[in-house]
Image 1 (tube, rainbow, N blue to C red):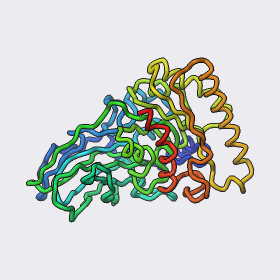
Image 2 (image 1 turned 180 degrees about the vertical axis):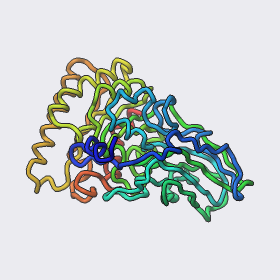
Image 3 (image 1 turned 90 degrees about the vertical axis):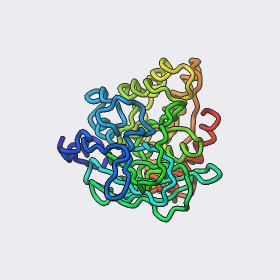
Image 4 (image 1 turned 60 degrees about the vertical axis):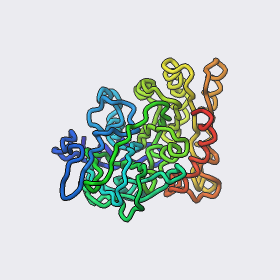
Length: 375
């Protein structure tokens, strides 16, 4: 598919964005593998594929870091499949006593950044660590330098063995990722959690546009706060409650489903697709909580004709579908208003639509009290 055609197909309502990308032939299948604890240039390199990554809903993927299963290719629309190659929401944990941590990763796209989202969020790595009280705290980022990057992810670390977490790029994909430490340092990959994952399905905002770094997307923030694995199925410009995606969602043994698709849908589509999507999930998971989220309010709504009417129409359609499902006895449904998801001061977006880090924190603040009792 030509780049112009791909971008046109991926352009969704309200500025949904897709970073154009190309697969270098040698990388298409993730052939660059690194043996676990390979020693090179005085470092022991640990391929994260050996220990596994968290945030995958399926194991049978065409490439290791894909977000949808291989069988989805040709079933979901091409833009959805292309976006599923992005590693949004994936992370991996490890334990080490190294005082310097190196990282190297290979991307699938040469497009490292977007006009309104930095390279650190689109294509970078994000490192967190547990402190002595067990809280996750930010440590450093891995700045992408090109399709292939090798860098010191963190140096001068206090001595001591601790747990670390690395989040993968939000709007790019990877074919290989490895962590390097001194050969005499302790290193243990921590197996990914799979049970009780919170599954987020939605738009560019769910995917993480426009966080400054991968750990600041609200699904990642909520994963740390709630101590639960999360699966990010945000598809920029293409979160449209499609039946093909609904059937895939129903295959995941989730602890909770969060449906946040309104920014990419019109009221008529919301009215047509909400009930079938929920019922598809319910047939497979009779009691798993399903949270329906309204669209965030555009910043600048008081000044732009049509914004308020659009919000009212979409939200009215979602509310009507929710009430019909409840009236029909469908259990375990929850509803989140969109009016205050980004706060009330119009200061939490890049472009009126996509959150800054502040906006993502506010979205996490709004969703946490709803999700905490459910998970």
